[in-house]
Image 1 (tube, helix red, strand yellow):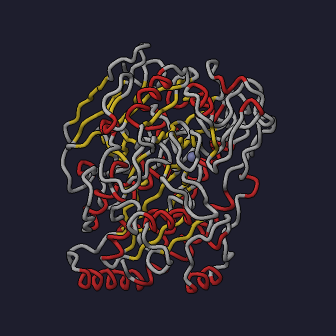
Image 2 (cartoon, rainbow, N blue to C red; image 1 turned 90 degrees about the horizontal axis):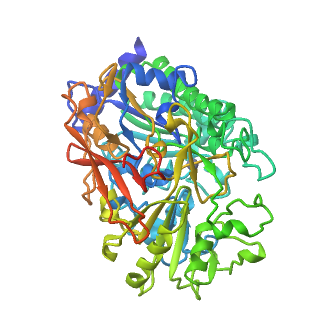
Image 3 (tube, protein in one colour; image 1 turned 90 degrees about the vertical axis):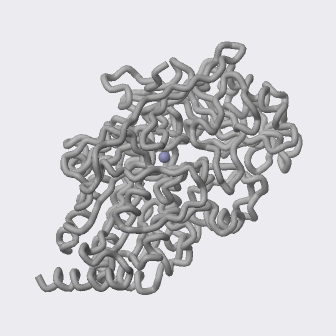
Length: 606
Ligand SMILES: [Zn+2]
């Protein structure tokens, strides 16, 4: 009783200090991100805590990951409320014109990394996203803020706060654990970890790390131990600290599971079934669910439950990976660590370099000769001089970002698109509006990729083919071709199939309706606006590609907005290739369901 009185007094004081309405104590918010959680993979059996939030609170059944369906683009949308058009976070791997200094050393930047994000801020006006984040706005209003979990997307939640003094940022790279420098930890937090009986550094992933090889299955365990430590930090250190401070708080918890485990699982080596529906992936979903339950239990024990909204989202959905494509020339060479006849990483790069008769260099600028058994692993730079490539390719799983940085981009683009329309693994093609209309492709502006981005815009975006293995719910057995290190049968994402765009979204708490299924389309760009509305924060947008407030989900909101489906079709290419886009319009926003060539894209209605 005593402690809840103090909390109320603290809330009142905070309300007076920060100009919030005194009538209601400022809310607290927990944003729980279950990385790579498919909407339909949550059941009361596999994930009781996740299912309970969806059942008892708001079920966002018509939810959307932003395309490309990979982590940092969606993290940027969750953080800022903007589409990628504005945040410029077009993929986990992007081309940045000029190399960063060592140890990065390439113009192809992997931005799912704390240290790289600092480099990016240094190059792009102090904030490469170009937009204020929800945590930054909350911090400015006197909220306590913390982001904890998987490194990369976690630090991105308050992208300009990198000294450890603003938002408390703790991830699996804290203390340089994962090879970087991480975000520094305040001495008082280190002391609090010790006092709580926690190790001062996160444990590594142990047996969950590593993905095996083409002849060796990956792990059969979820990322339990590492996430237990992170949950311990949240429940034994951060939440009690917030309570003691008497300040309202916003806490982001980014669960690496099920993503990391679905990528690595050893349930299905070289086979498409069970793929990511085996026992190891199910254990990872349960792991995320258990972590959410631990946070809810802690809120309850601390008396914070009644004044805390919990939103649960996933950055993207997931697929099982296929490495087979009969038409690819790249699959016909022999590689030391690739199953004979299967696609190597960089297969599109290899095929394109041959078709366009351009030298192929890897991300570091070394010449790649597939006929001698080499292939590019982190993207490619095509052309005679890798320092000034004609084409740069940034792999993002089920999507490749293609950049044409030379002066001949306008003459080269139609040749690249013609090549792409002839490949059996290509699902959808989008071309930068600045390069004009090209048959077979849709303009990038149609999918929210043209805006105020500070980073270089891709010239061409390619989604790979996806399909289902034929189970009752196609979204639950999606398969896709992808350019990444996973083996066939392991998990991947990034494509424009509905199995990748249909992420899990749900919310519960004093501001959310109860037992409500929201029929309207929503996306990861809507969270920041909805939460800013609840918390009375101002986000001060710079760009115009914004999400909306999901008012229909709120207790003080009305009915769901009108929404309707739209389909956009490209002109057919000479060989008949066509890109079709299924979208929905609601509340002035457009939501992207699926896009691609009919028959090559899961969930696409032609
Ligand atoms: Zn992933």
